Image (cartoon, rainbow, N blue to C red; front, side):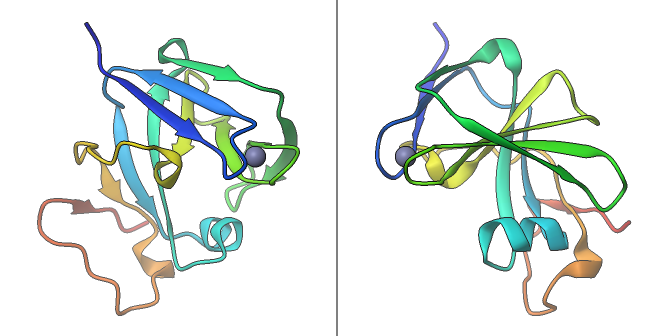
Length: 133
Ligand SMILES: [Zn+2]
């Protein structure tokens, strides 16, 4: 039986259930992730769409990413938390901010991206590869 992980927004209006392990766990240091989170990077996990189920209505906003592709953000309509993202470059996946999950036992799978946008003083240990664009 697959492990179930639950992601909830701050006001508990929207819940996302994800089964099994994610395909990726990636820290994004791009400017768009900094803008979205209001912090220096965002960490997202990627699940296949069929691994996920959302309970509750969301609102969406489509943003054009730095490379010209579209990213659709799905928000809780009450508290505004970003519940998930869907992208043109990974249409079979649902990308979820890792901080929404009750469980924080995600395996490291992926690379640290957009290192060139990093604040410079951020360093990950050797368990994660780094991708320099
Ligand atoms: Zn909410």
